[in-house]
Length: 146
Image 1 (cartoon, rainbow, N blue to C red):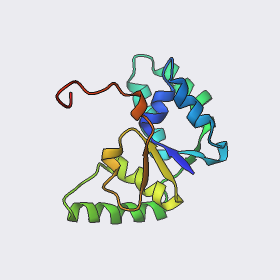
Image 2: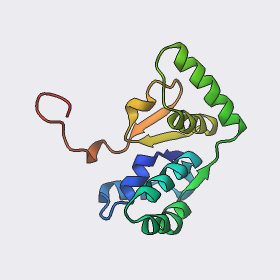
Image 3: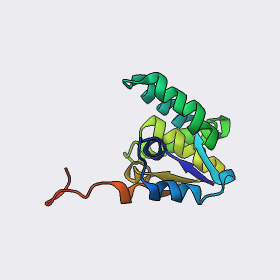
């Protein structure tokens, strides 16, 4: 199963999403496509903060959420999350709470995370992470990071 992170779903919601990304998602059987309840919250938050909240909330309700199975943050995932947080703090490499919850849901479900933010997740042992947005980012400026 592939779990799509918030940034990947947001990319697909663009007025003109990259055709290659749409094809890549379409190549995965629908039963193997999922997102998390955490991502749902982040997407709704973003829609509510936009200049067109009704438009984006309708798009989420009508076109995005029906396409993905939504995996919940339940007791087993919460237990994994607590252990991950303690381990990461012990190693002095904290990860933000929403990302920890998404990672815990993926680990609990044996799923791979499709994201554009691999660096935020790579410290989490056992989590399979793939950068789905690498081909769609502009190249860095000469001489380093922007």
